[in-house]
Image (tube, rainbow, N blue to C red):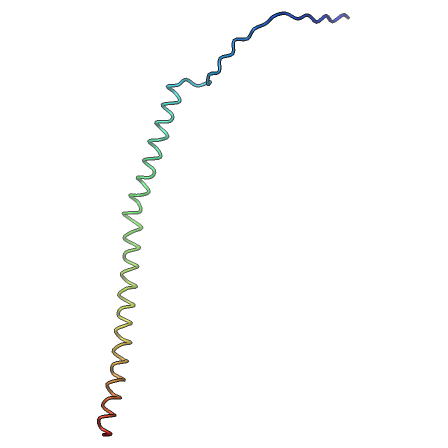
Length: 92
């Protein structure tokens, strides 16, 4: 068995191009951009319609509760101070 190696001139045409066509890449980029814009819009819409009213309700509920609780405490304090003033005036 004899193996003989020979060299010959062989040129390969090397074009550095992507496998996909330019218009296909552009079309996919536009689709991706449209989907991302729609998703951000959907998240914004859901937050405006669902999360903000719930948060506003909880905030208003606690503000009213705390404000009401503060009024009750100040009324009790005022009653005590008024009672002390009456005691002082009756002693004099």
